[in-house]
Image 1 (cartoon, rainbow over the protein chains, first blue to last red):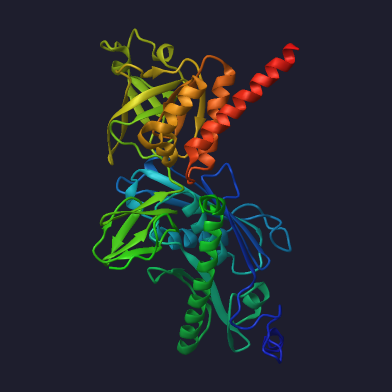
Image 2 (cartoon, rainbow over the protein chains, first blue to last red; image 1 turned 90 degrees about the vertical axis):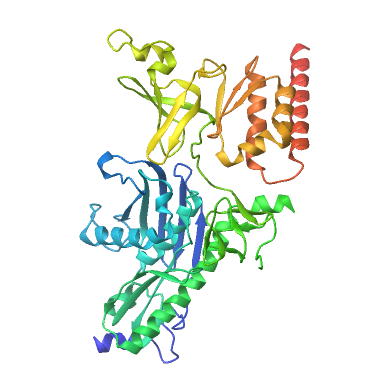
Length: 244
Length: 239
């Protein structure tokens, strides 16, 4: 493994795609891309292409799932069969079911669930093309789609991963770095409230390295948050222009 | 006590709008003496109260609101009505029949069937129960003719205009009767199809440009222009 991983960062300290260790991949975000959904967002983060759609709040079916004191959030993370190099079976895999839960739990703290009891919000995340860090990009897109649907929220949620590659702490890992690298730490943040809603770690890191990675990931989240806000406002830019 | 946004500036959920002795109004919330936005919208200050006029929201029932809904289910003693809110509304048979309801004899689907549109008033609603409707007032009941259009419910006040200036202007110019459901559904009934379409066009334009000023004048101008065009077309076809 050590032989392979040495190639991940070159002599100049640049990564496989020419990024610096603390650099994000190029990100493009668009809000309100689907007319049939109540809210939607599309994100491109490097080679990742992800679509998020929101339906609701609406009555819960089947009815026994409804909660008398708050709404429920249902989330489906799904990878398209063509999203990866080798065809992925369209049936939800163990990993997808887990990520659905992880994304749901990262979004839940940001929503005023108690406002509309006995209702449900459905979140659909469709990965069209995957290249590492899809859970973070999915959270970023889904939180924008929620805001687009007009659901009352405490804050937007921005997510970003950091990890260790060739003994260096790097930001926003792509697929090869994730697979060969030593560790991956995805973090989701509510930037205005300064609250973390998701923190995972895959691999091994020393305590100092972990702290360094989390701080780097938080920095990345804040950068992504700025882009999220811009994208959300861009949907209403024509509204503003006519006004002035 | 600083405020961080000017009036009518756009905010996104989580934006810190004001700090200190303010009251959280619509679409905002207070935490640690700070006021944050909870929806995307435009900031409005009202003395000590901070409001956000939402650009995107859905309809939440309120007692006394007039709404337009679609019957989605005929039950044993009433109907379930979709009022484009998170909750389905209930309309009881006794309320519609205005006499005691006899389950053995009365066939509810003959009175109102699935797909029928109704204008109704919300008579009760709270967190624990679905809204209940009533049609027991003049002007309420089954819709028999006209056209329906839907807009974002937050934009209904803009369609009404200041002291009803916008809506009365459209009514006058097009000669249509326009009924605004507070759930964002609008019923337009006119003498002919053309008039209805003209009113529909005006409402669509209001929705698109709802946050601009001087809108009433522009809408009125648009209607006049469209009317003139139609007159021209008529004249030409006669020749």
